[in-house]
Structures are given as C-alpha cells and as structure tokens.
Image (cartoon, rainbow, N blue to C red):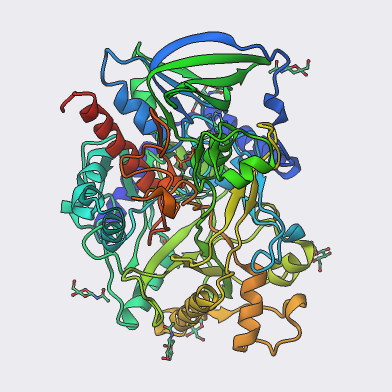
Length: 620
Ligand SMILES: Cc1cc2nc3c(=O)[nH]c(=O)nc-3n(C[C@H](O)[C@H](O)[C@H](O)COP(=O)(O)OP(=O)(O)OC[C@H]3O[C@@H](n4cnc5c(N)ncnc54)[C@H](O)[C@@H]3O)c2cc1C
Ligand SMILES: *[C@@H]1O[C@H](CO)[C@@H](O)[C@H](O)[C@H]1NC(C)=O
Ligand SMILES: *[C@@H]1O[C@H](CO)[C@@H](O)[C@H](O)[C@H]1NC(C)=O
Ligand SMILES: *[C@@H]1O[C@H](CO)[C@@H](O)[C@H](O)[C@H]1NC(C)=O
Ligand SMILES: *[C@@H]1O[C@H](CO)[C@@H](O)[C@H](O)[C@H]1NC(C)=O
Ligand SMILES: *[C@@H]1O[C@H](CO)[C@@H](O)[C@H](O)[C@H]1NC(C)=O
Ligand SMILES: *[C@@H]1O[C@H](CO)[C@@H](O)[C@H](O)[C@H]1NC(C)=O
Ligand SMILES: *[C@@H]1O[C@H](CO)[C@@H](O)[C@H](O)[C@H]1NC(C)=O
C-alpha cells in the first residue's frame, strides 16, 4: 500500500514536469475529432478500394523471403528474419503505420471504426448474435502495420500448459509442448512487475525481449473486490501465465510508458533502419503464383496505388494475413477444398480443407449495479496521466480482474470459462462496436442504473465450428464468414456459457460484492418473453441473443499430421501439397486455447523464425 502511494506521488510529480499545455491540447483535439469520426464511420463492405486501374503487373524485384501481412505474427517474423543481414526481406501490408491515436490503449473501439479495421461481418446467424443487426456478428480485424494488435485489448495471455501438451500430442511433435514453447515466450517478453500486489511467477517470464508486459496503473478499485470474492469461493489467486493458470488474477497488458505496444511498435520499430528489410504499406496482395511443374510458390501479386506488381521470392513466401484473410488468399491461389474451388471456377493446385474449421471464443456479458462510485477524471486530466504513463487511457476497457475456471462440465483438462470484470459503462459507441440492434440494446443498456459493472463469461473451448469461403473468384470481395457459434448438437457450448453465468451470479453473492451492494441488472428481452424471467430457459434465450464472437478466431489453416484429416499445414507450418509456402498466423491453431491469442501469435512468430533459420543452416 505504501509502495503504491509513493509510486503515485512520484508519477504525479513527473506528470507535471513532462507534458506541456500544447501537448494536452493536441491530444484533446485529436481524441474529440477521432471520436466524432468514429460515430459516423461506416465499415467497408468490400475491398474495392484496392482494385487497380492498371492490371498489368510491373516488376517489384526479388527477395529471399516475402512475408504477407504485418500483423501480430508477421511483424515478429520480419523482425527476426531480417537479423540475418544477407537475407533480403519484403514485408507487404495492406494498411498504414500506427499513429498517435491508435497508440492510446483506451480507444481501441474507436480505432475499430476507422481505416484500421477491415470491417468484416459474419453471415446472418441462427444460434448466436441474434441481438445483433441482421443477426450478423461483427468480425473486427486490424489493418495496418501491427495488424489486429492495433485495435485489440492488449491482454497478454498464453493459454494453459495443457493446451500445448494437447497440441503436441495431436501433432506427434514435442516441439509444441509447453516446455518447448516456453523459451520463445520468454525470448520475446520484457516483463515488469510494476504492481507489487500482483501474483507473478517470475521464472515463467522473460525480461530481455521486445514485448513489454506489465500491469495497468493505478490498479482499479474493483480489482480487490473481484479477487476477494474469488478467495471467498475458495479460488486461487494466480499468475495465469505462470505454473497454474486456473484461478483469479490481475491481467498483464502490453503497453510501454502507457502507450499501446502493438507488435509492430514492439518488433519492427526498433529495426526499421535495417537495409535488408523493405516494408511496403498500402499493398494489397491478391494472389500467390506457383511454378506449374514443381508446385513451388515463386511470386506474389499485389496492388498499390492503382498499380499491379509482381514480386519474386527466392526462398519462401510466408502468409501472415490472419485467420479470416489467409483462407481467401490461399483459395484465390488454388489452395482449398476442391469442391468449393470448382464451384467458383478456380483451378486447384492443392486440395485442402482451408477455411473449413473456424473456431472462436464466445462471450456473453451480464450487467450489475452497485452503490459505490469511483470518481472519473476529466479528459484533460486523463491526457496528462496518459502522457506520464498511467491512468484511464493506458488500458483498454477498464478490465478490473479476470479468472480462469473449470466448470463442472469441463472435459479438456484446462479452463473452459474465463470471467472478465469491467466497470465500463456501455455507450453509443459500444452499441456500434458490438453491433447490437436497437431493440436488444434498449432492453439491455438504455436504462439508467447506478455504478454499473459487467461480468462477462467467455467460452474457451467451443465444440462448434464455422467456415470461411469465397463469394466469387474476386479478390476485392470480402470472404463469407459463417461462425455457427453455439451450434453443437449436444448443447455443450451453451451449457458451458450458462455455467459461466451461474459463476458470475455466485461471485456477486459473496460478501465482497455484497459490501458494494452488487445487484443483477438484467431486463426482460423482447425476444425472450416466452420464457419465465431468469429461469434456465430464459438464460438460454438470453445467451443466444447476446452471445458474440470474442474476436479470437483461429483454426482455418490448422496444423496437423494428415491433410486427409483436415490439416492444411504441418507442424513446421509448410502448406501441404505445395513447396516454399508457409502460413504463420492464428489460423494454424487447430483449436482455441484457454487464453487470448495475441501472445500465442508472437510465440508462433518467434518459433517459426528459428525453424527457418535452422533449416537454412543458420544457428543462433
Ligand atoms: C477488439 C479485439 C480485442 C482483442 N483483444 C485481445 C487481447 O486483449 N489479447 C489477445 O491476446 N488477443 C486479443 N485479440 C486478438 C488478437 O489481437 C489476434 O488474435 C491477433 O492479433 C491475430 O494475429 P495474426 O498475426 O493472426 O493476424 P493479424 O494481426 O490480424 O495480421 C494480419 C495482417 O495481414 C494484413 N492483411 C490481410 N489481408 C491482406 C492482404 N490481402 N494483403 C496485404 N495485407 C493483408 C492485415 O492488414 C493485418 O495487418 C483481440 C482482437 C480484437 C479484434
Ligand atoms: C504525435 O504526438 C507527438 C506529441 O506526443 C507530436 O510531437 C507529434 O508531432 C504527433 N504526430 C503527428 C503525426 O501529429
Ligand atoms: C480508488 O482508488 C484510488 C486510487 O487507487 C484511491 O485513491 C481511492 O481512495 C479508491 N476509492 C475507494 C472508494 O476506495
Ligand atoms: C490452488 O493452488 C494450489 C497451490 O499452488 C494447488 O495445489 C491447487 O491445485 C490449486 N487449485 C486449483 C483449483 O487450481
Ligand atoms: C485509383 O483510381 C481511382 C479512379 O481513377 C481513383 O478514384 C482513386 O483515388 C485512385 N486511388 C489511388 C490510391 O490513387
Ligand atoms: C433510449 O431511451 C430514451 C429515453 O427513454 C429514448 O428517448 C431513446 O429513443 C432510447 N434509445 C434507443 C436507441 O432506443
Ligand atoms: C453456484 O453456487 C451454487 C450454490 O452454492 C452451486 O451449487 C453451483 O455449483 C455454483 N455454480 C458455479 C458455476 O459455480
Ligand atoms: C452498499 O450496500 C451494502 C449492502 O446493503 C451496505 O452494507 C453498504 O454500506 C452500502 N455502501 C454504501 C457506500 O452505501
């Protein structure tokens, strides 16, 4: 407690010394104008902005490695491969560099309504997202150097040790078990235990890497309540990235001096000066070319500023365009399910189940009120604090605490429910970000309740699978995304989320929460009037209306030993049936983990870079 107070006195002194009134004014203007823009912004419906006038490819030269997509994984690979001075690396990215606004963690949902988001939506859904406009889940995916880490919530999370052990068993490859991937996590990490009260297993963390990991300061007033409530229920307080994930925790986030540390800011900014690393932004890749005889990937076609270019890869092409965009690119290039490619007239080069097993986390929030208010700061004060590296703007949502739980019906050996506590108040922008229709929104949130907070259970091991397909043989159309959430025939998914809601209710009945007068604030949803309010059947209806995709899609180019059984890449990420082509992004994970995927993408980038160096005879 004393240490915390001293820290804030010091921060307060620095804050006065460090920022000028002009700077505060600049940020105030920037924030107000971006918020106004975001409220009016319409997400794009296709990628036609990239359609070139001049379709005849010009020569863009040749590189040893061409990496497509500068996202969470691609940024790490570009940084690590360019350490080898004799290798020429090209990194192609459709979007822009980050800017002063994307760097503010708190405004991720506002950056999501700008050119930094692709703007995908799912097809109309039947079993979840029913409270969303047209029953479509929004599929926010970042566009720019940094990828989805430009608009994510910055939570640093690796998943459960058992997830990796399950993966290595499935692959029959011990290099993916936790013992073997831990060194890559540690290599990339620069951990700061800047909250003395946070549980931290230091031997599991690295301190020399590019990726700053720390805790949000000051700790939220709700965190203590959340942790106390968990203790009352006999739940451990843990470092969820340490030995034992299961339990309640304070989340670790990727920020540096309070600014967003997207993967490009972490891994690319420090090496921008390397002459062997060329980064081409506003470059939209639409096809991979193969040698017809050897089936080796030899070139990439992309458009930039109304022109078309062809760039040759002497060694390899690495696709890091993410779970949603990698499948359409492979399919447009002739790699995908034969039946689907035949139906839209694309000649098949390798018949693989690309896009056939989309996996997601599913979340479903429940709102509560309390009798304890915590004063909020003026925007000017928030900006001053931001410029000194602490305060409201230096975390995404106020995520006050989180927990990883195994419910009574869990069968995979790792937590099936994550619980996130947040004291944010839903806003007009929140409605837009989540895509709610007016009716659902009004019933849930257009009500005045005192000091609201939400507990959000997240389903971690969904049984349901969805799909990503092409509409036509046209790279400027968005892919068809069918999540199919909560659709498993034995209802395990919805049963687990229901358990999660019971867990939330149990937590708020503890003394810790009762002391702040926590009270359930759920209203009768118009779509659920057939069910008696707050009965089990009511909650099932509530879940189908309000459950959404948690922006953690994986699984569309799964690793596996056997392409006949749905695998798209092997455990070194080589695409089956062709040569010199790898996929390295979240799409390779065959199932969701008990954790958020960003740190996993960074690990994949670290691991595959070492594999590549090793294969080409370079030892570290
Ligand atoms: C709102 C939100 C909150 C999230 N919060 C968290 C969190 O707190 N913690 C966490 O761990 N994870 C979080 N995630 C998920 C996490 O950010 C992603 O899983 C991760 O960034 C995926 O990395 P990737 O390398 O697979 O792809 P991406 O980072 O999406 O990178 C793909 C890149 O390829 C580019 N690209 C795509 N198509 C083309 C093309 N045709 N030509 C050229 N370039 C192209 C894209 O512009 C992009 O830069 C969140 C996601 C969202 C949307
Ligand atoms: C970003 O903000 C800094 C001050 O924090 C300022 O010096 C710089 O000019 C800004 N960049 C742009 C592009 O406005
Ligand atoms: C909330 O936290 C702040 C800063 O940590 C502290 O100064 C304040 O007293 C707390 N408020 C309450 C009501 O506990
Ligand atoms: C709680 O922590 C103890 C000590 O680390 C451990 O033995 C036990 O398995 C943990 N319980 C759960 C449910 O994770
Ligand atoms: C491409 O050409 C179209 C049509 O002339 C034009 O509207 C657009 O602004 C151009 N785009 C770029 C990036 O130059
Ligand atoms: C929210 O409630 C107010 C007052 O009851 C009403 O005027 C407004 O139209 C409602 N908004 C929506 C989106 O339903
Ligand atoms: C909630 O508490 C009740 C009563 O103690 C218990 O029976 C139930 O298993 C708990 N549910 C969850 C999901 O923890
Ligand atoms: C909040 O409500 C609880 C339970 O009714 C009560 O014990 C507590 O004193 C109240 N706190 C405030 C600040 O009103």
